[in-house]
Structure formats: structure tokens, C-alpha cells
Amino acid sequence: MTASLPDLLRLVAVPALGWAAWRDVKTRRVPNRTWLPLLGVALLALAVEVWQVWTGATVGYVNQRAYFLRVLISIGFVVPLSYGFWWIGGFGGADAKALITLAVLFPTFPTYLFPDFALPVVVPTLGVFAMSVLSNTVVVGLFYPVALTLRNAAGGHVAKAMVIGRPVATDRITEEYGRLLQTPEGFTRRGLDLDALRMYLAWRGANFAELRADPDAFRDPESIPAETNPPGDGAITVTDGGRPAPDDETADADSEEAPEETAIADPWGAERFFEEIEGSAYGTTPEQLRAGLTVLTSEDEVWITPGIPFLVPMFIGLLVGLTYGDVLYALIEGLGVF
Image (cartoon, rainbow, N blue to C red; front, top):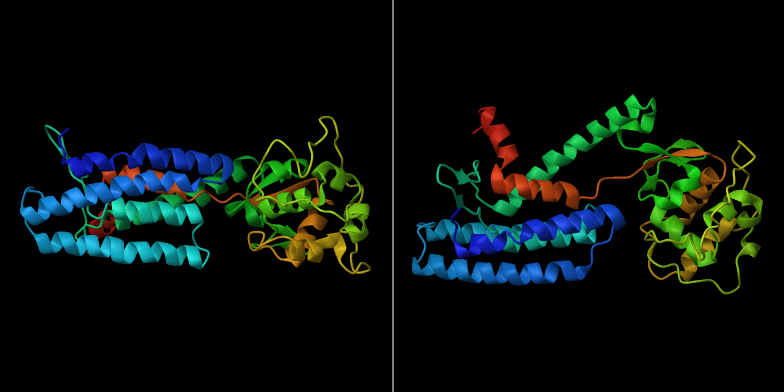
């Protein structure tokens, strides 16, 4: 394989983004330090390539205007677009940082020459690689609800939530990432965030098994210690809440009906929780916390939407982009639109 020095340097994105995607699946957390070295490589590769194009040292770009226009679109449009998606809540912080990094690292399509062929195969007219990675990511992400539905149907789990969620045993809920798809009234897309649940348990120094065993006691805000704990960020750890969960403790709620909460001024201490923590708990409201706790202490199985860590389809979109090219462009071209 032969390629320009900048395009060879850019291949470092493959193992780096692959590791970030794996970390996102396991912990839903990607350290900020992941992106700084990549941005350093990106700026070095861009500086070398700009010099090559400007001086005519490379034959890859005989049209300087086209090259610099693509760089301008990648950095001047994709970077603000990524930030905008994060600002409105469409992206997580790591997702936005990954796409911003790719926009600087791959402002144009790379070229890798082999004896009998060249990669990528399909290069769109626009020629902005980061845009193609984003469109590939969207195409890959469309397969996730299909796979989830088929998996649920094969397991006999047929419900309204089967397209976006999956059932889990309630006593294992603190070992999951995602969002609850249930309230005492039924299906919802905006249920309790499970990171917020872990933050709440850590804050009051309790584990989930204890809460399930005696929900009436925990519903009373007077049961909350005078001195609460730092809530953390809701990441999954070896402990459940503020202390390790007992190895042999299991608890099932006795009642099949949602308990009444109207007689208590601040059920579960939800208002106090949000007053004491700094910032928000992943957009969770006191009402969502109360509704989620009511469901989780009265049901043995619940539906959650695990979501798909966006870095996973982005990593696949990067691999597809480096090999095949722009999938969406190929599909549209195949339909005769272009």
C-alpha cells in the first residue's frame, strides 16, 4: 500500500476510535485525554498536507481551490455542527469530540493505493470525509432497532417498547446503562435515566437491594441521612450506591400495585436530591425519579432502552469510509438521483 504521509498518519484514528468505542460500550465514559493526541496528529497531518498542496509537492490535488474549500467545509461546518448537536442534546460529549477530531483529522478523502485497486472506492462529489463518516454512522445506526426488534421477538418479548428497548430483571438494573421505558401509568420514552438512579443511591448511601426490600421506608424523606454523600457521575462500579451490595441479599416487592405517594410532601427525597447535587442528573427531573423508583420497587422485570453508544456506529462508519467510501452517496447514486 502506498499513500501520502498525511494519509498514513491519519490511520491512527482507527485504533484510537476503536478503543473509544469499546470504552463507550463498557462504561459510557471516554476520557478527554483520548482526543488531545489525535488532535495533535490531525493538526500535523493538516499542516503537512496544506504545505504539499500549496507548493504543488503532491499530485493528489491539482485543484487547490477544491482542496481548501473541502477543508473549510470540514472545519468550518462539521465542527460547529458537532458542537450544535451536543448543545441541543443530540450528541454526548464524547460523540461531539470524536466527530470534531475526525473533521480536523480527515478534512478530505484519503487515498490508499494498492497494486490493483485504490481505497476508498466510492468518493462523493463533495469529498468531505467527515461528512461521509457521519452519513455512514447514520446508516449503520438504522440497523440497530431492526436487530433489537428481531432479538426481542425471538425471545418472546413482544411489547410496545420492543423496537427501542429490551426487558431486564429489576434486581440487575443498577448494572445496566440506559433509560427506563416505564412509569406507573405505562410506556414512556422519557423515563428515569439509570445513571441518575446510581447517583441517587450513592447520594443517600443505600444499595438497590435494600431499597427494593423496604420501599415504604425509603419513600419517606425522613429516612435520608442528615449528611448525604457525593453522588458521583452514575458510572457503574463494583459497589451499588454508597456501599457494596450484599452478595446473598435478594429482595422482591410484595405488592403488585404502585404504592401511593401523595401523602408525603417529598416522596423519596427527590426534591432534596436535586437541590443538593451540583448540576443536573442527565436531564432527570424529580418527577421522573419518583416515577422510576415506584416502578422499580413494584416490578420484577422492566423495559429499558439501552441506546447504542454513538461511537460504535461511528467507528464502523469510519472503517466503511476508509474502505468502501460513502454508503449513502452510493445508495442515492444507485437510485439515479445523481
